[in-house]
Amino acid sequence: MSSIPKLKRKSDDAASSSDTTQPRDHLEVMGGKVPSKFADPCAHAAKASMACLEKYSFDRTKCAEAFQNYRDCKKAWVLQRRKDRAEGRDGVFD
Image (cartoon, rainbow, N blue to C red; front, side):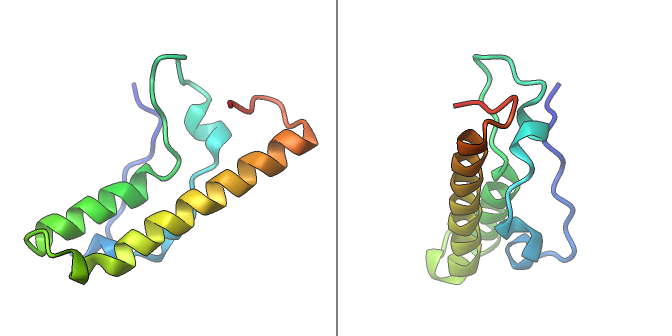
């Protein structure tokens, strides 16, 4: 099944969790990925954003930190993928 680790909540507000700003290692997440299956090392941050929206009745102003964590995670992931491709790291998906 899915190799994406489950988000471990430290509190009821998953958006405040500092681990959502960093992507999971994309080779670990995508290691068992079949070509038609979507995998995202930042899925944990996306889930934290959605959990925040649900908690605050979809008031986006209260979830700004969760959204920024997701953007930071995606940015770090893209930069890491670029670096890995430039270095010829095996197993990197495009």
